[in-house]
Length: 125
Image (tube, rainbow, N blue to C red; front, side, top):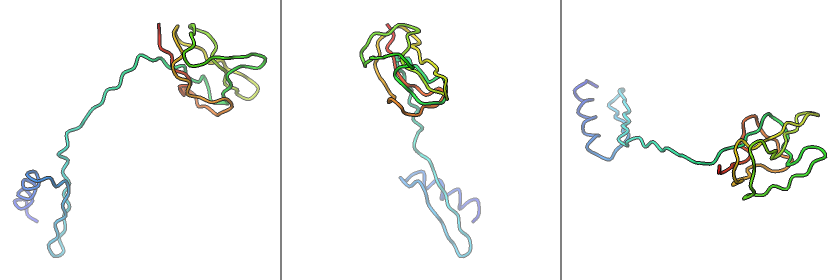
């Protein structure tokens, strides 16, 4: 296919709602794909602050010998222990990064978690 025909075909496609076309002439074959859709960039924002897992392990709402009765809507203070991640015989605390209200609990007792995984979301005061 010569450049003139290719150019004409491309210009014609831009005037239609076609996004893709395949042109075959004997042994020659060409496929064209146009993206006439403008890119949409979505910006998400939130005032919620995540409390993330400090390591890979098994999540518990309370460390050994402790109790934890936090529920969504509870008031929390910066540094307050929200739970613990069991790593072998060690337990690493999950703490509140800010003062605020516990809005979302996104983890279940005894479930595996990954390093940096958001476990709680807190609405700052």
